[in-house]
Image (cartoon, rainbow over all chains, first blue to last red; front, side, top):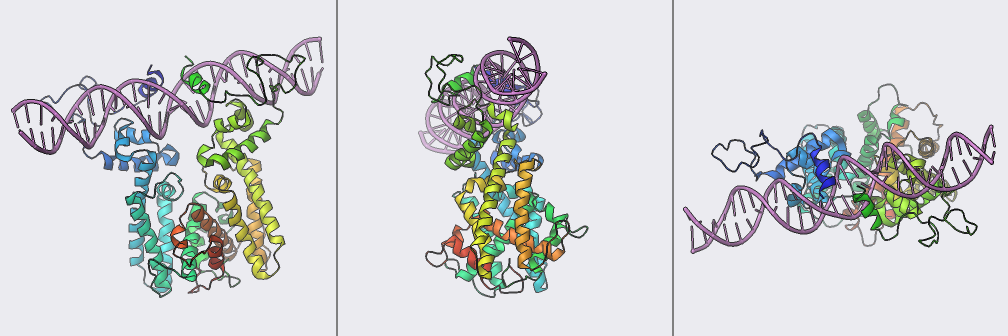
Amino acid sequence: MAKTDTKGEAARSSRAPRRATQTAASRPARRAGSAKTETPYHHGALREALLQAAERVLERDGLAGLTLRAVAREAGVSHAAPTHHFGDLTGLLSELAAVGFRQFNAAMGSACDTATTPLERALARPKAYVAYAQAHPGMYGIMFRTERLDYSRPSLHEAAEASFAGLANAIGAMRQEQISGDALTLNQGAAIARAWSLVHGFTMLLLDGRLEDILERLPEGTTAERLLEAMLTAPVASKLPV
Amino acid sequence: MAKTDTKGEAARSSRAPRRATQTAASRPARRAGSAKTETPYHHGALREALLQAAERVLERDGLAGLTLRAVAREAGVSHAAPTHHFGDLTGLLSELAAVGFRQFNAAMGSACDTATTPLERALARPKAYVAYAQAHPGMYGIMFRTERLDYSRPSLHEAAEASFAGLANAIGAMRQEQISGDALTLNQGAAIARAWSLVHGFTMLLLDGRLEDILERLPEGTTAERLLEAMLTAPVASKLPV
DNA sequence: ATCCAATCTTTACGATGTAAAGATAAGCGA
DNA sequence: TCGCTTATCTTTACATCGTAAAGATTGGAT
């Protein structure tokens, strides 16, 4: 018994749970007087440590490398430790997505501050949106690509809701009308959906490399940001935005 | 040895590879004279059968259920059989995505035929786009959500390229200008990217349930299709499409 | 007819998510 | 201070997955 798992885990380079410097023999050492950095059995702030570890793994190994066990390894705890804090993989991903939405909202907020002209104000959010996704593609993937997300979790629900509210408010300000929380006209909804779809779609296509075909056919050295700008400002041929 | 896997596989309800009716004892029966539907060792058209099985699994169990082994089970062959035809999971998904793009292109083509007025012509493609995604959410997910896709595979590359060409042509027709294959002006590229981003973004948000918040705040009984229509035709507040 | 190469099955292995049980420590009432 | 309770973390176990390698089978070329 215990063959498959034990062997697999033991074959790893870094043994399993070892958070601090510690000799092999000192493992079963109880709280002897010489307790310095003896890797306490109880981490103390494992939840936060796991979230930070998850973000690190995500940036280093991408979405495919972001597994429960990899996160536990990164944090230096046993592979089952995350369970107690997040329930399952969906839980961890959902909380991580919430972190992402909070980062995203902060970036959105500070982007609008520096804008002066109306045109700048109109372009600031979309640019910041795409810039965040490009700077944190893994996070953006977690937030928008994954089906393994539980939006009933309060932290994720709130953070995502705040993001949506920010968008709705920005659209409302641009249309110079108050957008109430509980009811929308068709035109208001259409304006919000249009803005969101446009920027989200552009971001997804860009991250997926689907826009390469267009970008390389454009005048030499046209960046994605420049294309986005043109997308938002270039005159439309018909009365339709398409 | 052979413990974990053997036991696991044997515990399944349907033994493994058994495509036709066949008694247990008749398994090692060679090509005796009584060969009727004896489950030939060589399937004959396994590649196509696997693709169809994959599509069935995708519709039944969603993206999460679409595994190499599940597809093999569905097709009634051993779990390693797909390897020879597709190499690995990426290969199978890529070929399946190619099938999806061909379906998609066909749907796109027939959608434009029935349009008469200019407005109808402008709305036909976007509507067909979203309609396909809603009818085949799994396929659309494979085609656009998955990072495990190998676009260097000729079949996928061609099918996706054709899809892109269709879009570019439609935009060109709407702008009443010829769009050449090898070079684009910034405005042309912007028009294509805008149309694609808009519809793709809308579709993704819709499939992810992200638009529910908007839809339920809209006047009673507003459908997603109606919102899309409004998105594409409602007057924009500023000169910008956002 | 015979041999070869393509096709399919068996077997095996490492990895993952998750459940269950054991170990440890911190908090708390007496 | 002592002992109990409970939260936290580790061990062990298992089903499943993707993939590699080796064996079985067969269609077809020579």
